[in-house]
Length: 458
Image 1: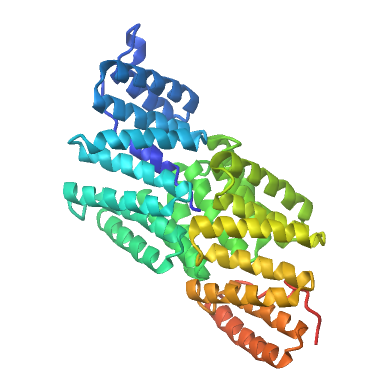
Image 2: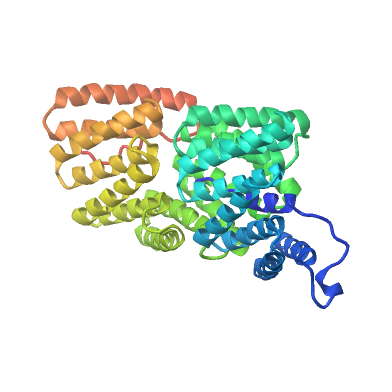
C-alpha cells in the first residue's frame, strides 16, 4: 500500500477561505475564524489543537443549520480524525460531507470530498468502492475544468494508486503516465507535485521487477521532495520508504534497513506511534529481518504491525494478512508447521476476500503455504498449492518475474521429493533460463535465493 496522507492535507487547504480576523480578536470566535485557525494549526502539524478548533467550528455550523458550513466542517474534522488513525469515524464524516455536497451546486467541493472518501476507502482495502468514488470525482472535475486542469492529473494519480492496489499494473502504469504527461506540460521539473506521480510509476515498475526503472523514478521523486520540503519532512520519508521497499525486493536488506531507520522516526513524529502507516512499515521491516534470519527482531516488528493494523482496520484487512504471513514464517523456522499453516490459511482467506482470488498477494501467500507444506514433508499437499500459485504469478507478474522464478524452483524441489525427477530437471532448466533473463534486465539485483527451501543436492 502506498500511503498518501498528504493528499488529505492538500484537499483541506484547497477549501480554505481568507478571513481578516483570527479567533484571538474576538471573545467568541465565529465559524469562519475557527475554520481558518484550525487550518493554520493543521498546516503546522498541531493536529490535536486543530481538531479542537474544527469541532468548535462544526458546532457553530450546526447551530446555523447552513449545509455548506456543516459539510466543510465535517470534512475538516474528518481530516484530523483520520490523521490520528480513527478510520471509522473519519469515514462517517466524509460520507456525510459528500452526501451534503452532492445536493449542493458546489462541484469543486464535491470533488474534494469524493477524493478524501476514495483515499480512505482505499486504505480500508475497499477498492471497488474507492474506484467508483474516484471515477465519479474525475467525471465531475472534467465537467468543471476540462482535461488540462492540474486537478485532473491529481485525480488520475489516485486512480492509478487504486489500480495498482488491485493488481492491475498495466492499467495503473498507463494512468500514471497520463498524469505525468499532464503535469510535465504545466509544471517545472522540480515541482513537488511531480513527485507523487513518479512514485506511482516507480511502484508499478518495482512490482513488475523492472528495478532499474523503478529506482530512477524513486530517486527523482526523492530529490524533488528533499529540495522542496527538506530531509525530515514526512513526505520525503514516504518517498524513501518506497526506495527501501525496492532494496528489499532486490534482497539488499542492509540498505533497506538503513532507510527504514530514517523513515520510521520521521513518520512516527508526524503521524503518531499507532498510525496504520507505521504498521505497514513495521511489516516491511519485519520482512527484511526475516530475510536476514533475525527472527527475534522480526517478531517484535510483526507483533507491533499486527496490533496497529487490527486496531486501525479490524481483523480482515490485507495489512493484518501481511503480519500473519510474516508471523507464519517465524513459526515455520521454529518447526511449528501446524501453527504456521493456520496463520497462512487465515491470511489467504483475508486476501481472497479483500483483494480477490487472482491478486498477487494471494499468489505470495500460496507460495508461503506451499513452502510450509514442503518443510513439513507434505509434498502431495504442496504440489497443488504451488501449481495454483504459479498460475496466478504468471498471469499477474509474468513468467520471468523473480518471485515467479523462485516459486517455479520451489515447485521443482517438490517434484524431486515426489521422485518425479525428469519433470524436476525440465523445470530447473527453465528456472536457469528465466533467471538469466531476469539478471540481464536487472543486473544489480540478486538472483533466486537457492536456500529458500534448503533443498539437498541431487
